[in-house]
Length: 274
Image (cartoon, rainbow, N blue to C red; front, side, top):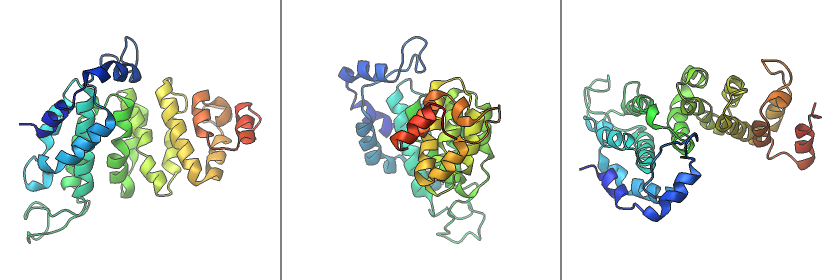
């Protein structure tokens, strides 16, 4: 029995389906076209995950643990089941830090109770590999935003980050490209803004509004920690020509400068900032 799936299905609320379908733009030609809903709000999903994730099994148990159950949920047409699987994966990843690895599986001397935080090939990497193998199921903005930076962002804090640049530049879907920029939230929270600015340049002239909003959001978050760095970025040269704050999409700029004093905001919006 798939415990996570069963518990989620028990909270289905048909009265909420139509509203969620509208909110996540599932109509013809919209970004969430064809997505299906059970009518379960996010707080309920979080509560189910909190109550069940420890009982799903974990990849450091010496077997596949929760992955088959999570995979079944990720393969579901129902949005809330995919979200629940991603939130459970975040919890498994978070608690895998410093977990005991079964003897003989950690590259150590095989002593019982060896602790291998962040071990390459260990349980945390298993979570990341699983996540990256299932990005096709991460197909709406909330699924991206609630999973990518607690997973990829956290994992890459002390590693090469070229994966995020590749996703932003060459992602197979809008959602993979969004993962590339939103994952940098973790870096920002650790006072590291360089990757956010660099990946923002890759996406600066992306055609989709959901990327404009994501990039603007991350720029705003960077500016909350270092306003001077954000202004330097906005007033710097667009790689495609011109000044970024005058060439970037309007929505992106509005999001980026949302926390600026009103007079400064208006100066940027009118193209007078220099």
